[in-house]
Amino acid sequence: MKVHLDCVQCNLRQALEAARLVTTDVNVQKTIVLKSLEVLSKYDSYTTSPEMGSAVHEVVKECTGNEDPYKKVKKDAIKIAHDVYPAMKRFVEAEDDRLLAALEVSAVGNLLDAGVYGDMRTVDLEAMLKGELTKGLGLGDIEVLREELQHAETVVIIGDNAGETVLDRILISEIKNVSGEGVSIFYGVRSVPMINDATAEDAIASGLDQDATIVSTGSTVPGLILDKADPKFLKLYREADVVISKGQGNYETLSDSAGRTVYFLLKAKCKAVAGDIGVKTGEYVLVRK
Image 1 (cartoon, helix red, strand yellow):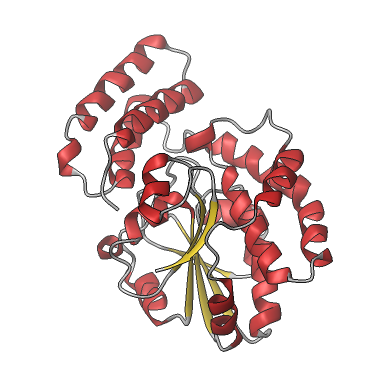
Image 2 (tube, helix red, strand yellow):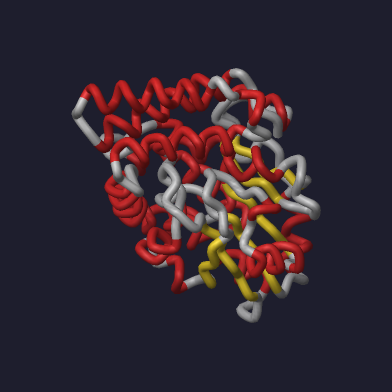
């Protein structure tokens, strides 16, 4: 998906937010903003918004010496998600269509995105998630997915933010119910800290290593660029029977260059992504491309 002008202001907002997470020194914050403006002035040199975002967040790391500005936010998001996990698990297990319910829970887990919504630690997450679950999935390719999962031996999930990895455990459990316990499930994470996206360390903290094999995608941006992916992950990605991609960043980097069928599961959080998919801003979607 191509870069939109709206991505510029969004990335500048993230730069200032990240700067304020790391330091109270206004001069450092000012330096980060000004250097970020230099990066953003090269708008035409970026293929996707996540590549632009990565360059901006590298400015934050360089100016503060902090390689993981969102570390505490991620840790807290994982804790919050652990707190609501039992309620979300009960919700899924009470539904007639448990796979659909698990997909909905996984999709609303996409709300745990500090890059878009800021610090989620002051939010009543359980109440928010329950409210969001009433919205359902706007575009649903679930029956095709269900059929493919019934015959799948290998499934790859490309993760997004750290907090939602906890709720993705519920989805993985329901995939195993459909595919059988013999299915191999791999969960792709970022290879370095980037905003609040999940790394292997974050996924292990969520307990996800108990349910799937955690693999690094090789990505250093808040998305997945295939020609820069780790060769081992790329082989898994290409050979998997089913690939499920979580979140906007992965959609923005993969939607035009996936090279195979991918199920994109996300909340369309901005007008640019919603317009590209063909839904309203704020809708949850499962779309097969």
